[in-house]
Structures are given as structure tokens and as C-alpha cells.
Image (cartoon, rainbow, N blue to C red; front, top):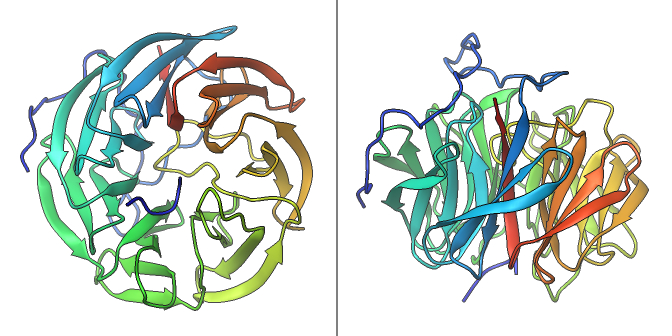
Amino acid sequence: MLAACGGAPSAVPTAPSGAPEPPSSAPTAAGVAAAPPTPAATPYRSLRVFVASDMGDAIYVLEGGASFSVVGQITVGKMPHNLAVSPDGRWIATGNRMANTVSIVDPYAMKEIARVAVGRQPHDLTWSLDSTLLFVGHERDTIIARIEAVTWKPLTPLVVGVPQHDLALSATRPNELFFTVTNSMEADHLRVIDLVTSRITKFKVQDVHDVFFTPDQSELWTTSSGYVGVPSDRLVASDPETRTVKAEFRLAGRYPFHTMKHGRDGSFYPPAETPMLLADHLGPSLLWMDPKERRVIDETKVGPEPYHSTYDPIGDRILVTSNKDGNVWVIDRTTHKVLQTVAVRAAHGIVAVGLP
């Protein structure tokens, strides 16, 4: 049974082939490097995009300049679902949902370089801000796995006591891992674990699907339900500092799902003036939102069951997956108009890296 959202490594590389040098960044007081900023002008000649096909047991590879096309596939484990790219752009990870493994992919060599056994039904993944650790949540296990980058050695997991669905980290709170609870009779479905003390704090929020920060990192938002056939227009805004609910609000006639997250959905993020983006299953559409006023200011119609999105800084475009019709939708960030669709079977997670 799947929840919401509709071992040993096989190899130990020292570095991915052709990977660019990571940007330098000074450690924070907690010893974790701050996330690199999105460059105003990129030094990249093109973008390489990776899309998990959760019915094809593969990651599709797209490349784009003026337009995008499929240039290859990478075979991974059974039912790859979410994807996460390390902040330095060196590694891509996917949770093989029905294989209880995580595949590590070299995005420049375009091949799987390690497959690591984890807990039952891995779902969401996110990287530490310094790209040294991968966190993996599980829908059927009560731990969050930790995998060391480069060696791909499983480290002692975080014992959280409940199965999890989605994860979130913020550059402003590098030692706090937020997670949502699934497949549990326990209350309080949003929680946070302190990565230094292992202390877990519960938010008084129920019926939670995804969790993410607003673009200015001042609020945590959660969507509700998460089941494809059980729509909910409800969102809850919480204060990450006080761990309290600030507001519950609804987007009438919508079913908000996911947004872009640091440590997961790409090496690049839209400019600061960009409205907040939310996938909407009832549109189906990509919603452009004002997070301060908590209202929709525009929408771009896309295919049924839109899930994840990533940003293309070269063409100033947003790429969104739609699972049911098997497409990646390429959208102009300024005009909000669809420029292109690219066929990818059962498209779900999506990330991007730049090619020098």
C-alpha cells in the first residue's frame, strides 16, 4: 500500500566525471555551510534536467537551450519517486519507493554510481546545506536515514518514532529537519528534529501532506490530504521559531500539493521577486502566489496531477511535471505562458544542473 502522493553501496567514487568545482562558502556557526545563492547570470551553456519516472524504473534526462529534448535514461530501482540534487550540484539521489533503496546518480556522467539500502518505502529526500549528508524519509518506517556523500555509507539513522512523508530544511535553520507524519494514528502531523540534540518538537497541526518554507523563509506552510482522490484546499502557516500555528487558510477550488525546496528541487531557484509557486491538482495548474497576502495572483494550466518543479536560469523558465499525462511543462517565468511540453512517462520528481 502506498501512502499519500498518489545495505551496502554498489560503488564508491571519489568524484563525478566532469563535475564543476562547487562554489566556496563559509561555514556557519553550527559548522554547516550556507546555501550558495542563485547567480544572476549563469556561466552554463545549457541545462540538464532529470525526471523520475515512477512507472518506468528510470530517470529520464533532458537537455535544453532554446528548447528541451530527452537525451537519455538512467536505470534505477523500482518506482523512483522524488529526486534531490545536492546544493553543490555534484550528486542526484532518488528514493526507489518499492525497492527500499536510494540510487545515487552522477549527473555529468549520467549514470547510477551507488545503490544504498534504506528503510521501508523511502519517499522524500533532502541534502544538508553543505552537501555532505543525504536525509531520506520513509513512509513505512520510523527512522530517517542518513547517507554520507562520496562514500555512500549509511550512518546512524535519526529515530523519530513515526513514518514520514515529506522533509524540509532551510538555510536559516540548518540544524533543524522538519518532517510530516504519515501512516500513523498519532496526532500532530508536523514535527522537527534538532540535528544536534536529536530533540523532536511537535506542531499542533493535523492532516498534513507536504511541508515547505515561504520564499523569505519566515513561515512554514503545510498542504493537506496528499491523496490523489481526496482533494483538500486547506493550507496552514506556522512560525518555525515558536512552533505555533499562525493561520489556517483555504484556496477555494484548488488542491495545493508541492512547491520548490532548497536541498531538493534543483541547483537554481527563481529570482526573489518571483511569486511563490504551488502545484494544484484541481486546476490542474501551476499557481503563482503572493505568500504575504496568501492569495493566488495567477495560474498556468498544465496536465493532470502536477507534482514537482525546478528552475532554469538560462532561459528563465519553470519546469513542472504532470504525472497522469506524462509530461514536463516548460513555462516562461515572466509571462507565465507554456512554451513547450516534453513527454516523460509518469513524470514525478524533477531537478536540474548546469552544464559548463
